[in-house]
Length: 394
Image (cartoon, rainbow, N blue to C red; front, side):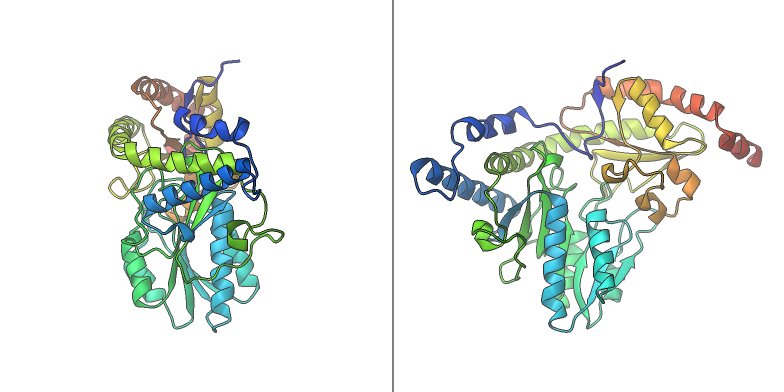
């Protein structure tokens, strides 16, 4: 069996970088103390977490007291949304605004809140996958408690007008949360300039380990206690801290900030090359917006092709990619993101997401573009759907 050697699914997860691993290693082997202990090993661990919190805050233009370490993006999304919902419901506000193609960590949380009496407005994202600021403004009422719009989409990479949406929320006295899990490796985020009240980040999307993330919560916004049993995270999230993971997250955020511009430039070159080559294939759709996007992610749909079969054929060539978000890769349902763009179920089923990292090379892109057209032709030759499409378009 051919071992995967080309990894193009970095929107699903990334490998730990050498820099992050080296930063974490001492806290796994030598400096492993419990940060709550008063002896030297424990105090050193506590100081390390304080330093990591300060580093993360500075990179986001936040205050250290506004940073809460979590297990990842899904936990951060849940914590932020549920806390604001409870806070504002007590003040008679039970309306939340979001987009139709948020991550399920947001959508499923909102669906649960709907069962508890909340009203949720799901804004359209149109064919290019971008929310319109005027739609947000028009949807706000005197009952609106929260707007939650992702910074960059996890499947098609489109970047939303976060700063402008945040400004509308500030003008109307509405809290604004953004899931920045996909944006953090690719965009210089400034929570002050972007008018963000709450923000979620996950470490494993930016070359840190799985199981660590953070929630930024602007001072003055009350978070609900998430886990009881100890005084960690200012008494809101009990449990001995993931010391090495927190160190790694801070290092990964710093590394991304330092290399981001050069990496984005390289990704833009690769993305343009992929787009120009793939769009030559018959009856292919580009999903997203080529201007308002993170350059690391491109998404296409091929008529007459099943996404699962496409991924398996690529895997046989040693290439790992995706046909949708990682959290739903085991589902036979088409991506809710692609359906939100207006694609039919048949077209949405034939999607391919290619997502790059700083480790992606020109040789890997060349290999992908060498084998992809042949795979599409092979799958279409076996597809009754493609035969029907050809007949209908003669």
